[in-house]
Length: 145
Length: 226
Ligand code: SF4
Ligand code: SF4
Image (cartoon, rainbow over all chains, first blue to last red; front, side, top):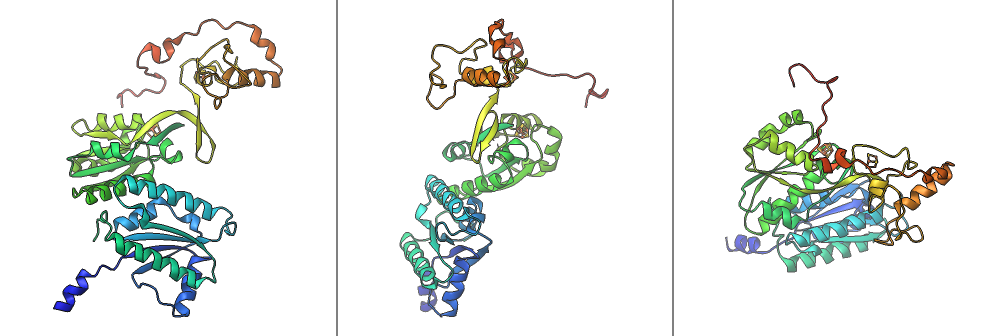
């Protein structure tokens, strides 16, 4: 019983990571295969390109229970669809501003460039956001708890 | 098409204070094309409202709906249920659509979620510009296809004025002088001489100056009036 209470009190941030299938997703697979440890509360969503990401995806994830979201895109100048990663970054910037205006910390949205062979970078980024979210506490805007 | 842009979220939230169940209503017409009020924007706004109210400790239920066109009232039939269920509607169509909701559901409170801006064209991704003011008596035939009403800041019929400099309007260096554009265009089509003809004062009674306008086409009207 005491153990159960302790577990309930330990906040484990839920993260939804939108991953480009040409970079972020492969990096995540690499991390998994290499048995690198990263928080298990991360849900990976595979996208054909980071440019597929939209404010709607990020907001819905946060509304439906995520404490933070991240977008993992290809390195600069290295998008298979040329400008997908640039577009993604623009939308993320806009979403952060929107969140700030409705009283939700913009730091809950992370973005990073990486390559398919960068499993360690994937882990680093996930841990970075996880740490930040642990400090921020649960997302005050989530509707589905 | 009609170009509109989202109202600041703070303004929308202020209107919705005290409401417990709200419907956000989009339009698949112009505002979908200018990325301000289509199905996706309904989802985005609904999500923002829910999260903002949740974090403020005043949760609200938000219903979502989008119709073909809010300026053709028969489409409201498809979203009647959610409108009736909600105690307030946020319409993210242009002002015509917002008024369509008000006229169709006279007992409902409706708020605009967008600012309707102008009739314009999409010049580039994320860039729109005004092209017509609906003056009701088009003069594009004498101005080489460039509208002096919408594109000259003073709607001059015999421009340019003395403020035209280096092709720019005196109101801002970012605004092209409409009459420079007209001159350039007429030169291109070999009609610059037509500028010698003085255009008589325009009859503005067909424009907004004549009061609210209405068009009735008897050739199209049905006996039933419906
Ligand atoms: S309601 Fe307004 S935005 Fe929608 S189709 Fe009609 S004119 Fe366009
Ligand atoms: S002259 Fe009148 S109708 Fe023609 S484009 Fe200009 S504002 Fe529109």
